[in-house]
Length: 266
Image 1: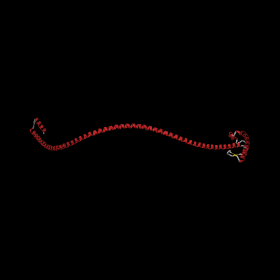
Image 2: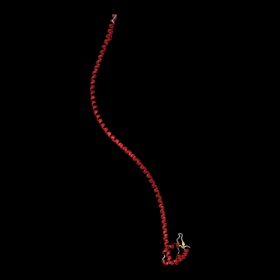
Image 3: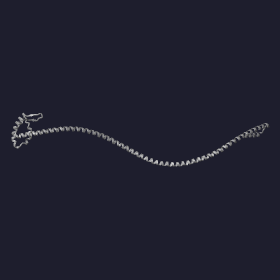
């Protein structure tokens, strides 16, 4: 059978005194026999820990030297410390595994967050590029509008100067027209006065003309009556001449011509 203390006894080989090296060799052979006997009476728990009962401990203590007992006690303390360290390392390992899992989860979260942030940054870059493009277009529009405004201001200034000149010309024209209107008003008033005076003269002349027309009409009537009388006398003279012609029987051509000429006058 295998000695369970042989791997651990080597840890404390350097701790034995130089004076007990010969007795340690003898004790080793003795401890080998005792260990063989103790191994048969020892019980092993499911966790691998060797548990000794009181009889085994008494039998081993009676068969071992004090140096071997001290070595075994130091080995037991060292084993307990190793178990405590193993439990500590196991707990640290579990903590490290838990921390690693949490770190992995945090890493996945941060990676997802970084990717989302990269997408957001990319979208913001695209939006910024669009905004910059829009700004450039707006600047071009602003420059165009600025030039347009300058042209309009120049045109407005020219229009204002022309308007001032036009107002001055219109004021001069209004003054001239007012003067002309006053002159024409005076002339109209004079013409009206002249027309009133002429109307009076025309009325007076009309009255005179009416009287003259009436007198002319009366004279015409008298002349017509006189003409009728002359026609009657001419007719009577023709009858008388005709009677004389018939009574004389013959008449010279000169007398006839004179007679015709006299008839024509009447």
